[in-house]
Image 1: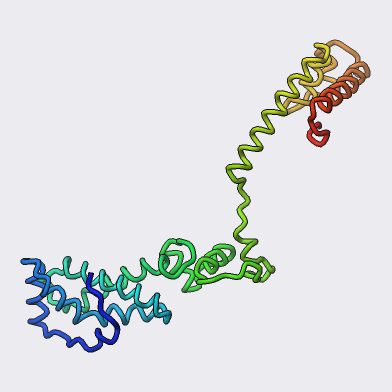
Image 2 (image 1 turned 45 degrees about the horizontal axis):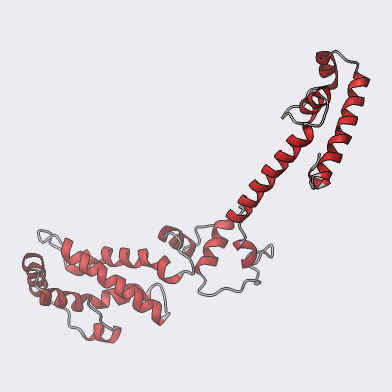
Length: 249
């Protein structure tokens, strides 16, 4: 890929219309590398000028100008010679598109969509979207520096509410262990006690005392007595198995 400095780009003479057309024809018809290089060199200032609109960082500027040169190359391939238009006019879109697409990749700490980057630059984002975009666009960041009016820091914004894979695996393992412990503890209860606990404590929608007493054909005070005794025995059994009381409802 052709590489040309800013100063060298400024020194390159502009081509006349017939010279420009001749270079385009030779490249498109014959793949003449010298014709392509002549065309790109004479328009390299266009890439540098567009890149300078977005940054004054020398490293970023050079990278963006290189993307602009790639845009010039694509324009040379796609130029429609039947149109009465100068190459610089036609290539402007290709240069701008190449540079704007590369902006987010070159100038941000993490990858963000080019559209999001441009919207953030133009102030078209608000709320957390704006905060996250500004965070990504920062070349460096201080984790304890406030990023919003409410005092939230970069470290706060980087915290994900989602569980990590390790936390998910640990939670599933703990849940499975508790289910096994509960099943074993339930097996030590009398059948009537186990039925009361299942229907009063383990269902998504627990049975009402009145309804369950009627279904089991026992008095309500007797049902409460059996439930209280069963819960006590269940807790004792679970604690004996090493289950924390905090997990026993």
